[in-house]
Amino acid sequence: MPVASGPDRIVKTKGSDLLRDLDLTDAELGCLLDLAAAVKRSPEDYTRALAGKSIALLFEKPSLRTRLTFELAIKQLGGDSIFVEAPIGVREPLKDVARNLDRWVNGIVARVFSQATIDALAEWSSVPVINALSDLFHPCQALADMQTVRERFGELRGLKLAFIGDGNNVAHSLMLSSLRLGMDFALGCPAGYSPNPDIVAQAERLAGAVGASLAIVHEPAEALRGAHAVYTDVWASMGQEQEAAIRRRAFHPYQVNDSLFALARPDAIFMHCLPAKRGEEVADSVMECGRSAVFDQAENRLHAQKALLLMML
Ligand code: CP
Ligand code: NVA
Image 1 (cartoon, rainbow, N blue to C red):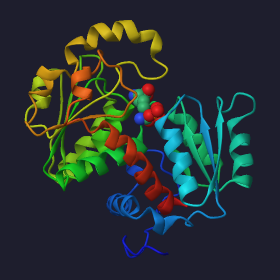
Image 2: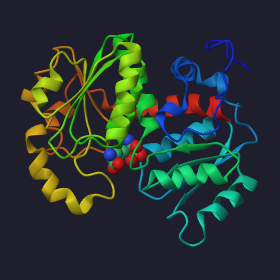
Image 3: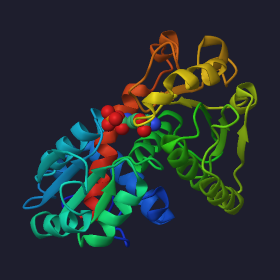
Image 4: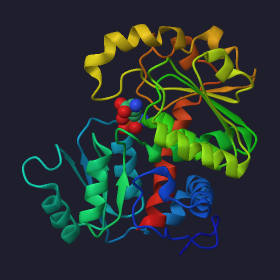
């Protein structure tokens, strides 16, 4: 493998799928972050790595970043991709879709409404399946985000990430990924919008194992105290559009504006997975400020997913 500037060798993932963040072992996650930095530095070293390989992108929901960065990553690694936007398992049973695809392609990247859909795709197909967002997780986003924080601060262990807003898919993935890398994680959300209790229980175990702290609070100031990175996401995720008005009322005090952002450390960065609703979860002034890392995050989707594909395929 021509990796002059990168790791000596690319560690192949043990499990065949990335359905949830913890499917990667600690060692695989560490390798992935190093490899993502290497492919970002020297993309020319990896241009044939996926030669002869084809990957299907099956999306039940819209996407800008995830679709484009996967398509570009596959192309820049020398592979081919085919994109389909359609509900999975409606025209024909999901188990048939999965067993057709694995006769044609070397991997499946899927964005789904329900985690159960991607779990079933993985169960029925023999090729690696990557979760490109479900109702519960957004692991590819968290990989790029960890890369971004590490670039900004040079390390992760001992830093604090504060997530202000809905205890949603992005919050779940960030919670699991940041804690296992030794970061403290605090989530400030309105009552009734806390993260999934099973995922919080997993996160508590991770925090205990690495000696990091986890806090789920309803007071944004408490979550923000001492934070190196302040993260938010839309108040109504895809599929929750009918709840948007109720959510706007509940989340109003949680908008990351200049006064809320000022409660974090003076050198804190602002993060958002995008797309953002300016004037709702974030003020335009925060999105556009010098400490906003949102476009670095978007760029790193490309590099982190290249690393993931190199390890999984
Ligand atoms: N952050 C993210 O996943 O963006 P898209 O929905 O545009 O893919
Ligand atoms: N929580 C958002 C993330 C979009 C990238 C959603 O699921 O719509």
